Amino acid sequence: MDSVWNNRKQSKTDTSSTGGSKLVQLQRQSSAIGSALMTSSSTTTAPSGSLTEQQPGLSAFLTGSGDAVSTTDPSETSTSHPGNGLETQPPTGDIHPLRFNWVFWFMHRSPGSKILNYESSMKKVATFGSIEDFWGVYSHLKRPHELPNVSDYHLFKQGVRPVWEDSTNINGGKWIVRLKKGLSSRYWENLIMAVIGDQFEVGSEICGIVLSIRGGEDILSIWNQSAHEGRTNLKIRDTLKRILGLPADTIMEYKTHNDALKDNTSFRNTDVFR
Image (cartoon, rainbow, N blue to C red; front, side):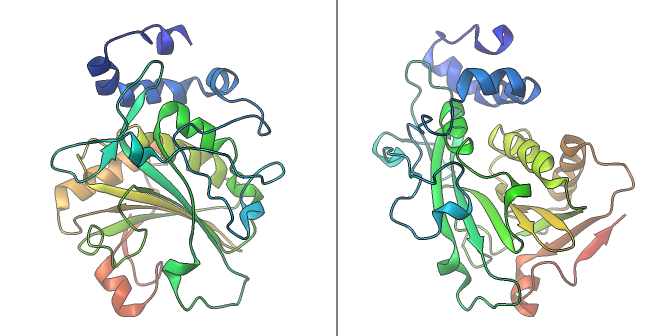
């Protein structure tokens, strides 16, 4: 823990620039950080998150009683990052800001049922912009292995809707990894921390990540802005394999959002990379 928190009183500029590296250290020492940053689900708050109140179905993905957390809107205290159109909170006190603000979304449908309006079926769960706020939100969420089948967690940059048609997503695509049941909780957590900690090192190319819980498998996907930037896409693929510790012969799939719009499917008719 000392290697993570011994510079908590450093200058604002230095704190902001090292948010990603701090998160990696948090990942490596997750058990210690859990006790230091997370309180029980009955007392944890998310200072800049927004666990959505007055929305039906919150109990599907919240731990404990499912009570919403009283929080403030991060847009009230955010500062702009030139060139990317996204915002993060200014560093204050012991807060360690992330490069971007992020939003958790959740969707569930009964097996066999159809969704007529995908976007309206998603529930906006929470927004966060710092390491501390992430843990405040994350500690309230059910882990993937606790979710019912045909559920989806989305984690996207604030201002980017988790749909193919969004202007940030439309010319991009997603890498897909299919997981055996029982593995998704660990892989999802590792991927979350790598993405919000900016460990892919591809600028603002990453739009968000999705975990899809299905009957026979769970599916991880990472969305990027530019489907035809070959070198960047390969870097994302290789970094994803490294972060998750996937075997070298793991089958990876890629699908552009334009192709998804044409055949109206998320995980079929993909390009396969062995």
